[in-house]
Image 1: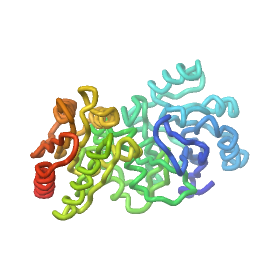
Image 2: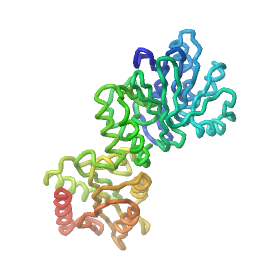
Image 3: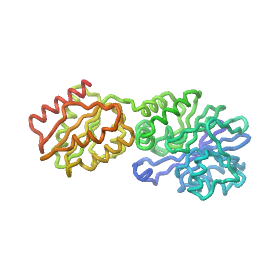
Image 4: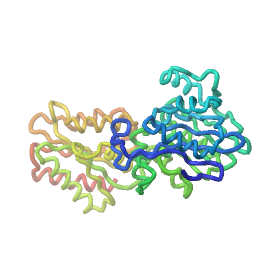
Length: 386
């Protein structure tokens, strides 16, 4: 348990037992489920934690409260890793009031069979809750990344409780680069909702924020402009880093040889970074992260059952459902007969905005030949020039 400010305590937990977050994202360094306690004339708890940590969380709260009764439980987000212990809290402290948006209370009815009609306070955009010297102002953040989400501004300590925004994978007792796991978290979980994130950033720009308290990952206090700028780039689908990401599948190794040659030629032509992803073997979320980080992408795969290889189809689906845009796209296809891969990949991207398709399309018939090598050299030059 640590102090965020003089009056705000961290009472969250670390999870090192979890292998897949949301059933799909690998978390080798675990997860943090963050919860905070504001001690004033009134005591307010900010969110609960995952159901597997009920006892630890309630113990953390009791220790921080030091005999006091909490007055409020503020529920900013109803995803179960943050809301699972609402009932446990309300049973433990029967005089407390739960504070949430109207949509959150409707979700509580779905999850728990009750909306706490006799012990609730419904809040929305601009509403305030006075705790004494601290006044909490609520900001709606719909679809960042659920519809009921609130963020909370503590004007006295200049703290923004940001719900899932500015979160990352990884428990708090591990040391790792923030941006890498925050980027993977953002594009995997929040990435589809860039427009909604932009709307929240406009609200945040009006606040003199000194501390950001997310529901996952570390409390952010230093160099906040860095985190805000990254979120602005990510949510506007801008290019964060110069470079080329190559995402490929290869059945018998020939497509792999082609993309390895392309990576070599890109480096020879001065490309600052080449990120190579074998979609059958890599972490798909890492490949998606790379696709949104860099401004240029090469999609390389085989024609398979008159379509494309399944891992490539899955990867492109990940991109399109997250509103992929503002990128240069190149294709490498391999087909022994009736090649279809480039045509299929391009058609899957038709709904994406502001994509530029690079020439030439590299077309391999089973194995590379001299013409393919020349095409790869020309493509490398084109991508480095663009």
